[in-house]
Amino acid sequence: MAKPIKANYDQEFLLPPSIEDWASKDHPARYIREFVQSLDLKELGFKEMTNEIDRPFYNSDLLLKIWLYGYFHRTRSSEK
Image 1 (cartoon, helix red, strand yellow):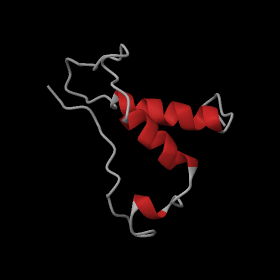
Image 2: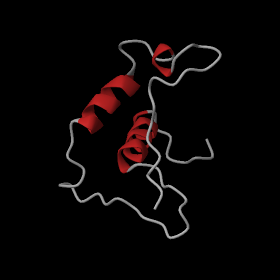
Image 3: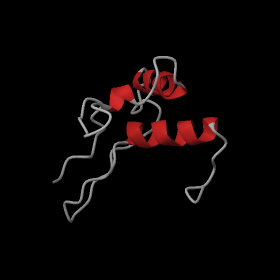
Image 4: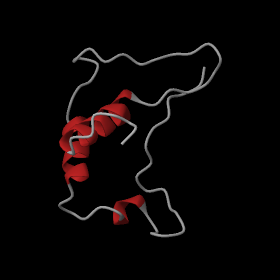
C-alpha cells in the first residue's frame, strides 16, 4: 500500500532555494500550518484514506491547510 503524500517544507527548487523562502515570517500560511499541526486530526474524526491501486492520497493535514488558506483568502473554488 502506498504512503500518503506529505508536504516537504525543506524541498529545494531552482528559485527560490527553499519553500520556506517564499513566505515571510509573518505570512498567514505559517500560522495556518502551525495551527493545523497543533491539532489531533484523528481525534477530530479525520480518517487516513487507503487505495487498492497504490496511488497515494494527499495527507489530511495538508488538505486542511490548503482549505483553510483558501478560506482565509475568500477563495471558495479551485477555479479561481
